[in-house]
Image 1 (tube, rainbow, N blue to C red):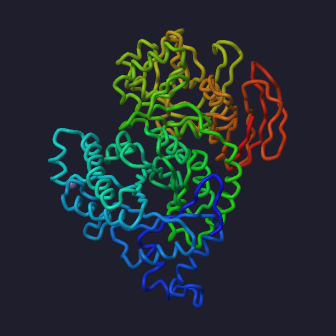
Image 2: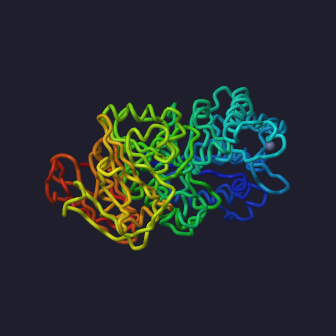
Image 3: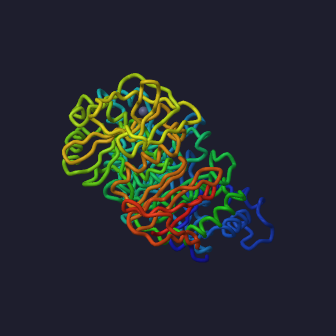
Length: 578
Ligand SMILES: [Zn+2]
């Protein structure tokens, strides 16, 4: 097998069904007659397809997904991939078959304990590495689970139940069978629901050798996830932020991508921008002979070179405490508008931070924010966070208060100065945007972006000073997707306010994302179906930019920034150093 990519390992996941179709009794009939290894005809044919397009060097050979892979199939698969020089590990999708219907197990059932003890002992005896696909979750509300839950909430009960189950019925039996086995726990895309279904991001990463990210955001209108595309990047950042920092990879698939090759490929780009050692494609059977694999091969070849220049991902943390939910994925919508946010399970020591309704889950949030402001930092709080905290100390920081009224209006203003001069920008959205009404104490705050309506100006972004810092309040549309409707010029004022501690920001339309790295490199990804020019502001005196071999001279220098005009291609990623 030829070598792989330089900057990541590419793996392909084979489900139980894939293995049956490749190596089962009926598979040979579908294979190429007279091909080398005739008894593996179907396998040879399928392998040749993937080898033609992708530099993959590893596969996951699944042992269980409602059904179990028979031992003779497992042995054939291991021999086949050994012969090809492809590394392999095993995998499991922990879903049960109840009356013919797949679904999660009941984890208070002693039968489940027995089944997992046996499965993990068997996997560890046959393999040194195990991947757990992302349904180590429970929604069981059987009488036994209800009784065991008692007075706890489902998140309290299930996060405890699943952590204990992982230790006693996954890790313990696997270790007993093979002391060297390494187990990776893959987390699903839907992080807002983790705790309700028992995923424990506080304890599990310490228990497993590695964790892994499901970055399959799919078609963002027609998949039923509530994820913008940016989640393919930000989920990886979140899982990388979990102590002890052992996320090692990410995977995505072509399910619910509307047969749109571009939708599929965007997931690959954003996954690689998040930084990971391994990318896994799910799964062999549904990717075989699909045109997106040819396109993916070309893209990965190019990205392998392009991402080599990127350092460690940077940006502005959105504080997402363990087991929290609230204004789910709002930072991803802001990421789609060019604010380089990433969710972080740990409150930062210094620098700007975004707090959402989920951040209020931290019982010591007030003390943390007060210390952060006293240390001279910018703290951004969403309307949802302010609403939860305004009667728990935040009224000390600002007179702004979220009301229970909302307002729909299309006109917005953006201000660099006070907003009272002629140095202002007013723009209309294509349709009204509904925002909660935030009451202000006039002259207690500086307005930066405002929704305008007759005698009813409403905060989009404003700040109050407290001690040495600034507390910004960012309003949040009733539908988070309406951030995209706010005129780009106005969102430019929002980006600028977020960027005091950042090396660069831009003026331009929404649906353009910015990714920052710690080595003076950056990436910009347009999700627009048309070209779009942006004004890129970089701190300091910059001579020029080299973007994809094209030299770009500065337009002007002002207030310590060098400004460049960049014409972005539609639906395209650019990576550059500055
Ligand atoms: Zn149950």
